[in-house]
Structure formats: C-alpha cells, structure tokens
Image 1 (tube, one colour):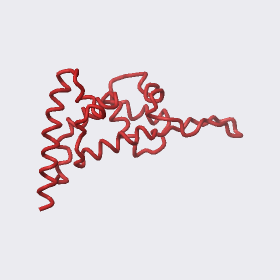
Image 2 (cartoon, rainbow, N blue to C red; image 1 turned 120 degrees about the vertical axis):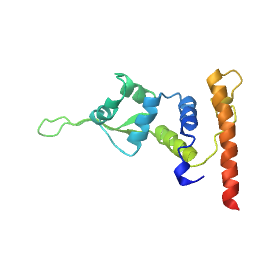
Image 3 (cartoon, rainbow, N blue to C red; image 1 turned 90 degrees about the vertical axis):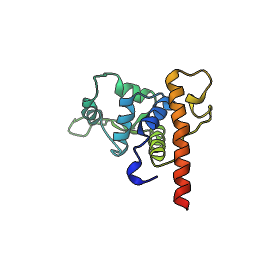
Image 4 (tube, helix red, strand yellow; image 1 turned 90 degrees about the horizontal axis):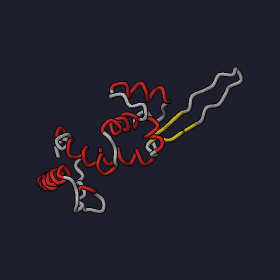
Amino acid sequence: MPQEDYLKYWRVIRYYILRKNNLKPAELETLIFLRSEKYFTKRDFDRFTEVYPWNSRRFDDLLSHGWIEVFSKPKTNPRKKKFQTIYQLSQKSKRVVKDMYDKLSGDELSVDHQTNPMFKKNVKYTDKVYRNMIVKMNEFIRQQRHLSQE
C-alpha cells in the first residue's frame, strides 16, 4: 500500500478498533496522544482532553478499565511539597494503539467471529455494513501486496 494512502481506510479501522475494544472515539484519540507522552499527570491529561466534549468521568473510566495505570504515587519531599501521581498507558493500551497503526500500515483485519465482534451472527446493521467494507478492504490490501511483489 502506498505510504500516502495509509489513511484510506481510517474510518473502517477506527470503527473496528472502537468496537473490538469497547472504546469511545475520544478515549481512543486520548490513548493515541498519550502513547508518545510516556508519562503524564492528571493535569497533563486534563489539558489534552480540553478539546473534547466535557466528561468528568473520562480519566477515572480509563483508569478503572485498565487503559491507564499508576507509574508512581505521590511522595512528600522534605519541604512538605506534595508531588503529583505519575501515570502511563497500560500494556493493553499500547497493544491497541499498535494494532491500529499496524492496520493503517496495511495489515488485514480479522474476519473471524472470535476475534472480530462484527463478524458474529446477531450484530447490528452498522456492524454488517462495516464488515462488508472490511472484506473489500482486505481484498484491496491483498491486491496491493500482490502488485508490489511483481
């Protein structure tokens, strides 16, 4: 797949990642942003998420669902100043973001109902539309791979 076309199937891949991992769009975008931050505070998190619709539970939800984790707890220094808790993305988050980048780079999406919930029998109409697009996308990826090998 040409480098400049890596966003061609962004919408399909984004829907797949959201659906497979039970994430909301703002949560996924936050994980994408935080991936390169390595460590962050609650204040850093709040600064970044100011651009999203207000959701006072977003941080707590990501923490309680294992998307972010505590890297170090606050300690008090000799001058009685309290430091902030430092957070990082969990391995689970890092795997999801890596999976998304791999798919954007040309990896096929699974059509197995055990690994892709959109391919289960009783799914909503939107899932059926997206799974049809996944089949077409995978065909396109295979064709591109075949053409590049010639």
